[in-house]
Image 1 (spheres, helix red, strand yellow):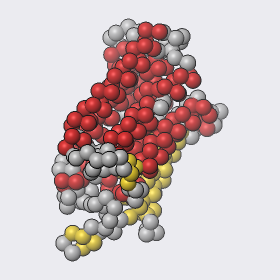
Image 2 (cartoon, one colour):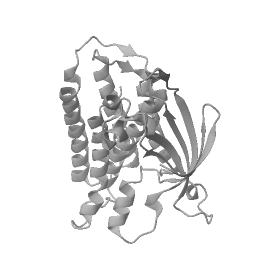
Image 3 (cartoon, helix red, strand yellow):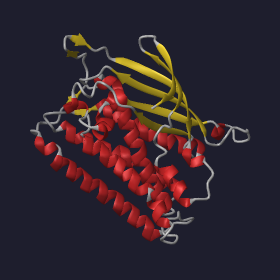
Image 4 (cartoon, one colour):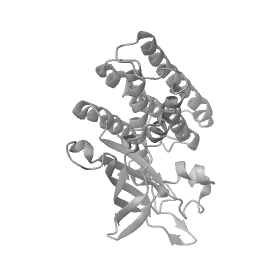
Amino acid sequence: MNFPSYFKLLFISLYLFFNCNGIIAQNNGTFWKKSDTLNRPRRNAAYITEASTAALTLIGINQLWYANFDKSSFHTINDSNDWLQMDKIGHAMSAYYVGKIGMNALAWAGESKKNQLLYGATLGFGFLSAVEIFDGYSSAWGFSTTDILANATGTSLLIGQELLWNEQRILLKYSFHTTKFANQRPELLGENFLEQTLKDYNGQTYWLSANLWSFHKKSKIPKWLNIAFGYGADGMISSNTNYSVNTNTLDRTRQYYLSFDIDLSKIKTHSKLLKTVFSTINFIKIPAPTFEINSKGKSKFHLLYF
């Protein structure tokens, strides 16, 4: 499913809300500090909040989105080639960060690591799988096994790193630049900048950003320095076919990137406000010198790539 813009915005809003609690903590004692031992009232509040938020959100999605389409018997679709898989990476990133929210909420309550991973880190996968079932009963969509696989990939990246290293050394990140394609089909790719950041896959790039110091902690490598591997695509003004505009057919092209990045959470600062801001926006890839090669074999260097 190609999520509507307000649905994607919901994920961003939830992520910002839960991460910005650090700002509240500065004026609200120790309430938002993680508990070293199990705090049962916090644990109960975390589970109830997660369950109720997920349930209410699903109800809202059903009323705001699916109610506009006819119902059908449960069916599947094969959308594995849509948007050159850019939407699948978006699924993985959503599952990763929603799971990270769930995991951090249980860590705040002092819940055991096992339960953080079982009931917190899987939140994204469970929520998105429920949405996928909605798709299966909608005449306009269908249950996508590749979407489920993408959701599982994002959750696996989160849980796997916690099991292997007890930390997130490799982050999923996002960057965006405006493109000429949005003006050709604004109803699909966005009519303004905010809509385009959510809907125009031509301008989106998804990154695996690895922290170099985390893999060699006795080295003198700056703790904040990352190397990032990116994937993007362009020439897409329809989901799965080439599309002609003014008799010119646009070629759908994959793009691969190598760049530097910054792990903002590892920048030293005594300011609690800055720490919170850095942690909150750390899903955004920092513009940096970047090497690009595309599926046509053409390469280029960007002094700063967004």
